[in-house]
Image (tube, helix red, strand yellow):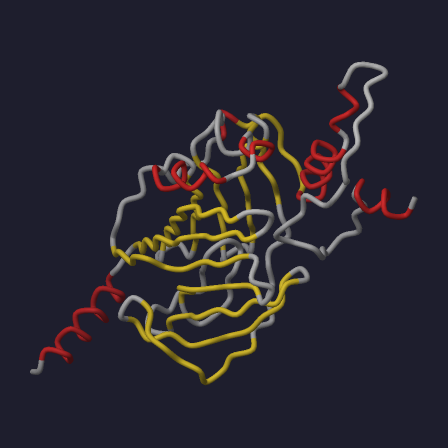
Length: 258
Protein backbone atom coordinates (compact mmCIF):
# COMPACT_ATOMS: atom_id res chain seq x y z
CA UNK A 1 0.00 0.00 0.00
CA UNK A 2 1.57 3.31 -1.04
CA UNK A 3 2.02 6.16 1.46
CA UNK A 4 -0.61 8.42 -0.12
CA UNK A 5 -3.30 5.74 0.07
CA UNK A 6 -2.32 4.88 3.64
CA UNK A 7 -2.51 8.54 4.69
CA UNK A 8 -5.94 8.86 3.06
CA UNK A 9 -7.16 5.72 4.83
CA UNK A 10 -5.94 7.03 8.20
CA UNK A 11 -7.64 10.36 7.56
CA UNK A 12 -10.96 8.69 6.72
CA UNK A 13 -10.76 6.53 9.85
CA UNK A 14 -10.13 9.61 11.98
CA UNK A 15 -13.30 11.22 10.65
CA UNK A 16 -15.45 8.08 10.88
CA UNK A 17 -14.64 7.44 14.52
CA UNK A 18 -14.26 11.03 15.74
CA UNK A 19 -16.71 12.00 18.47
CA UNK A 20 -15.64 15.61 18.20
CA UNK A 21 -13.77 17.87 15.80
CA UNK A 22 -11.96 21.09 16.64
CA UNK A 23 -11.18 23.63 13.94
CA UNK A 24 -9.04 26.66 14.80
CA UNK A 25 -9.79 29.64 12.55
CA UNK A 26 -8.33 33.07 12.03
CA UNK A 27 -11.17 35.61 11.78
CA UNK A 28 -10.36 38.87 10.00
CA UNK A 29 -12.66 41.92 10.07
CA UNK A 30 -11.85 44.75 7.62
CA UNK A 31 -13.93 47.78 8.53
CA UNK A 32 -12.51 51.08 9.81
CA UNK A 33 -9.47 49.02 10.83
CA UNK A 34 -8.33 45.42 10.53
CA UNK A 35 -9.08 43.18 13.50
CA UNK A 36 -7.83 39.59 13.68
CA UNK A 37 -9.35 37.26 16.28
CA UNK A 38 -8.80 33.53 16.97
CA UNK A 39 -11.91 31.34 16.71
CA UNK A 40 -12.40 27.73 17.79
CA UNK A 41 -15.19 25.58 16.40
CA UNK A 42 -15.98 22.43 18.39
CA UNK A 43 -18.29 20.00 16.58
CA UNK A 44 -20.04 17.29 18.59
CA UNK A 45 -20.57 14.73 15.83
CA UNK A 46 -22.69 12.44 18.00
CA UNK A 47 -25.24 15.08 19.04
CA UNK A 48 -25.07 17.13 15.82
CA UNK A 49 -24.23 20.37 17.65
CA UNK A 50 -21.43 22.90 17.56
CA UNK A 51 -19.87 25.51 19.81
CA UNK A 52 -18.08 28.48 18.29
CA UNK A 53 -15.76 30.36 20.63
CA UNK A 54 -14.28 33.79 19.98
CA UNK A 55 -11.10 34.07 22.05
CA UNK A 56 -10.41 37.44 23.70
CA UNK A 57 -7.62 36.02 25.90
CA UNK A 58 -5.29 35.25 23.02
CA UNK A 59 -1.89 36.94 22.96
CA UNK A 60 -2.21 37.27 19.18
CA UNK A 61 -5.44 39.23 19.63
CA UNK A 62 -3.92 41.67 22.13
CA UNK A 63 -0.87 42.16 19.90
CA UNK A 64 -3.13 43.02 16.97
CA UNK A 65 -5.24 45.41 19.04
CA UNK A 66 -2.33 47.82 19.37
CA UNK A 67 -3.51 49.21 16.05
CA UNK A 68 -7.16 49.53 17.12
CA UNK A 69 -8.53 53.09 17.52
CA UNK A 70 -8.96 54.14 21.15
CA UNK A 71 -12.73 54.58 20.81
CA UNK A 72 -13.13 50.89 19.94
CA UNK A 73 -10.80 49.33 22.52
CA UNK A 74 -13.45 49.20 25.26
CA UNK A 75 -15.09 46.25 23.49
CA UNK A 76 -12.06 44.01 23.76
CA UNK A 77 -10.45 44.78 27.13
CA UNK A 78 -11.78 44.86 30.67
CA UNK A 79 -14.33 42.17 29.82
CA UNK A 80 -16.63 40.26 32.14
CA UNK A 81 -15.90 36.93 30.39
CA UNK A 82 -12.90 35.95 28.22
CA UNK A 83 -14.92 34.38 25.39
CA UNK A 84 -18.00 34.99 23.26
CA UNK A 85 -20.03 31.94 22.21
CA UNK A 86 -22.38 30.76 19.47
CA UNK A 87 -24.17 27.45 20.15
CA UNK A 88 -25.76 25.80 17.10
CA UNK A 89 -28.05 22.76 17.25
CA UNK A 90 -29.03 21.16 13.95
CA UNK A 91 -31.50 18.75 15.59
CA UNK A 92 -33.94 21.39 16.82
CA UNK A 93 -32.59 24.18 14.58
CA UNK A 94 -31.73 26.55 17.39
CA UNK A 95 -28.99 29.11 17.86
CA UNK A 96 -27.96 30.79 21.12
CA UNK A 97 -25.36 33.53 21.46
CA UNK A 98 -23.51 34.64 24.59
CA UNK A 99 -21.71 37.97 24.23
CA UNK A 100 -19.92 40.36 26.55
CA UNK A 101 -21.06 43.86 25.58
CA UNK A 102 -19.85 46.83 27.65
CA UNK A 103 -18.94 44.50 30.56
CA UNK A 104 -22.37 42.89 30.67
CA UNK A 105 -23.06 39.37 29.43
CA UNK A 106 -26.14 38.87 27.26
CA UNK A 107 -27.75 35.64 26.13
CA UNK A 108 -29.22 36.28 22.70
CA UNK A 109 -31.74 34.08 20.90
CA UNK A 110 -31.39 34.34 17.13
CA UNK A 111 -33.44 33.01 14.21
CA UNK A 112 -31.82 29.81 12.93
CA UNK A 113 -29.77 30.54 9.77
CA UNK A 114 -31.38 28.87 6.76
CA UNK A 115 -29.01 29.51 3.83
CA UNK A 116 -29.81 28.53 0.25
CA UNK A 117 -26.41 27.39 -1.00
CA UNK A 118 -25.36 27.16 -4.65
CA UNK A 119 -22.79 24.38 -5.05
CA UNK A 120 -20.08 24.70 -7.72
CA UNK A 121 -17.55 22.35 -9.27
CA UNK A 122 -14.55 24.46 -8.21
CA UNK A 123 -12.16 22.76 -5.83
CA UNK A 124 -8.81 23.28 -4.11
CA UNK A 125 -6.92 22.05 -1.04
CA UNK A 126 -6.95 23.58 2.46
CA UNK A 127 -5.07 22.02 5.37
CA UNK A 128 -4.34 19.02 3.08
CA UNK A 129 -8.09 18.49 2.63
CA UNK A 130 -9.92 18.77 -0.69
CA UNK A 131 -12.63 21.42 -0.51
CA UNK A 132 -15.45 22.53 -2.82
CA UNK A 133 -16.70 26.05 -3.42
CA UNK A 134 -20.27 27.18 -2.62
CA UNK A 135 -22.07 30.52 -2.72
CA UNK A 136 -24.90 31.66 -0.48
CA UNK A 137 -26.66 34.82 0.70
CA UNK A 138 -27.36 35.48 4.37
CA UNK A 139 -28.80 38.72 5.77
CA UNK A 140 -27.71 40.95 2.94
CA UNK A 141 -24.25 39.49 2.38
CA UNK A 142 -23.13 37.07 -0.31
CA UNK A 143 -20.73 34.45 1.01
CA UNK A 144 -18.09 32.48 -0.86
CA UNK A 145 -17.17 29.42 1.16
CA UNK A 146 -15.04 26.31 0.78
CA UNK A 147 -16.34 23.14 2.43
CA UNK A 148 -14.89 19.64 2.85
CA UNK A 149 -17.18 16.81 1.64
CA UNK A 150 -14.76 14.34 3.27
CA UNK A 151 -15.66 15.85 6.69
CA UNK A 152 -19.46 15.41 6.35
CA UNK A 153 -20.72 17.73 9.08
CA UNK A 154 -22.86 20.77 8.25
CA UNK A 155 -21.11 23.34 10.41
CA UNK A 156 -18.78 26.26 9.90
CA UNK A 157 -17.46 29.52 11.35
CA UNK A 158 -19.80 32.22 12.68
CA UNK A 159 -23.43 31.24 11.84
CA UNK A 160 -22.64 29.59 8.50
CA UNK A 161 -24.02 26.05 8.18
CA UNK A 162 -26.04 23.71 6.00
CA UNK A 163 -23.50 22.37 3.51
CA UNK A 164 -22.62 18.67 2.97
CA UNK A 165 -19.25 19.20 4.64
CA UNK A 166 -17.41 21.29 7.21
CA UNK A 167 -16.68 24.87 6.08
CA UNK A 168 -12.93 25.57 6.28
CA UNK A 169 -12.85 28.98 4.62
CA UNK A 170 -15.43 31.73 4.14
CA UNK A 171 -15.47 35.34 3.03
CA UNK A 172 -18.16 37.85 2.10
CA UNK A 173 -17.89 39.27 -1.40
CA UNK A 174 -17.41 42.81 -0.04
CA UNK A 175 -14.14 41.72 1.57
CA UNK A 176 -15.22 42.76 5.07
CA UNK A 177 -15.20 39.38 6.81
CA UNK A 178 -12.86 36.44 6.29
CA UNK A 179 -12.58 33.11 8.13
CA UNK A 180 -9.66 30.78 7.48
CA UNK A 181 -9.04 27.37 9.07
CA UNK A 182 -5.53 27.03 10.47
CA UNK A 183 -5.73 23.65 12.18
CA UNK A 184 -8.06 20.62 12.32
CA UNK A 185 -7.98 18.24 15.30
CA UNK A 186 -10.02 15.15 16.16
CA UNK A 187 -11.39 13.88 19.48
CA UNK A 188 -10.38 17.03 21.34
CA UNK A 189 -12.02 17.64 24.71
CA UNK A 190 -13.39 21.15 25.04
CA UNK A 191 -12.77 22.58 28.51
CA UNK A 192 -14.30 26.01 27.73
CA UNK A 193 -17.55 25.04 25.99
CA UNK A 194 -19.83 25.51 29.01
CA UNK A 195 -22.27 28.42 28.52
CA UNK A 196 -21.52 31.27 30.99
CA UNK A 197 -25.08 31.19 32.34
CA UNK A 198 -24.16 32.41 35.83
CA UNK A 199 -22.74 35.62 34.34
CA UNK A 200 -25.76 36.48 32.18
CA UNK A 201 -27.10 39.98 32.86
CA UNK A 202 -30.15 39.66 30.62
CA UNK A 203 -31.70 37.37 28.00
CA UNK A 204 -32.75 39.14 24.79
CA UNK A 205 -33.95 38.41 21.29
CA UNK A 206 -31.53 39.40 18.53
CA UNK A 207 -33.75 42.37 17.64
CA UNK A 208 -33.67 43.64 21.24
CA UNK A 209 -29.92 43.12 21.46
CA UNK A 210 -29.19 44.99 18.22
CA UNK A 211 -31.35 47.89 19.30
CA UNK A 212 -29.55 48.00 22.67
CA UNK A 213 -26.19 48.18 20.87
CA UNK A 214 -27.48 50.80 18.46
CA UNK A 215 -28.66 52.99 21.33
CA UNK A 216 -25.32 52.56 23.13
CA UNK A 217 -23.25 53.60 20.10
CA UNK A 218 -25.46 56.38 18.75
CA UNK A 219 -27.01 57.96 21.83
CA UNK A 220 -24.11 58.22 24.28
CA UNK A 221 -24.53 62.00 24.59
CA UNK A 222 -27.67 61.39 26.67
CA UNK A 223 -25.40 60.72 29.65
CA UNK A 224 -23.32 63.89 29.23
CA UNK A 225 -23.81 66.98 31.45
CA UNK A 226 -26.53 69.43 30.40
CA UNK A 227 -25.27 72.05 27.98
CA UNK A 228 -22.55 69.83 26.48
CA UNK A 229 -22.47 69.94 22.69
CA UNK A 230 -21.26 66.85 20.82
CA UNK A 231 -20.73 66.70 17.08
CA UNK A 232 -20.23 63.30 15.46
CA UNK A 233 -21.57 61.27 12.57
CA UNK A 234 -24.16 58.75 13.63
CA UNK A 235 -23.76 55.52 11.74
CA UNK A 236 -24.61 51.87 11.93
CA UNK A 237 -22.74 49.72 14.42
CA UNK A 238 -24.10 46.82 12.39
CA UNK A 239 -21.13 45.39 10.52
CA UNK A 240 -21.96 41.70 10.05
CA UNK A 241 -25.69 41.53 9.30
CA UNK A 242 -27.77 44.01 7.31
CA UNK A 243 -31.08 42.32 6.54
CA UNK A 244 -33.29 40.46 8.99
CA UNK A 245 -36.30 38.18 9.21
CA UNK A 246 -38.01 40.85 11.34
CA UNK A 247 -38.59 44.63 11.01
CA UNK A 248 -36.10 46.79 12.87
CA UNK A 249 -35.32 50.52 12.95
CA UNK A 250 -32.01 51.93 14.14
CA UNK A 251 -31.14 55.39 15.41
CA UNK A 252 -28.69 55.93 12.56
CA UNK A 253 -31.46 55.25 10.02
CA UNK A 254 -33.74 57.82 11.65
CA UNK A 255 -30.90 60.37 11.62
CA UNK A 256 -30.49 60.04 7.86
CA UNK A 257 -34.17 60.84 7.32
CA UNK A 258 -34.02 64.11 9.26
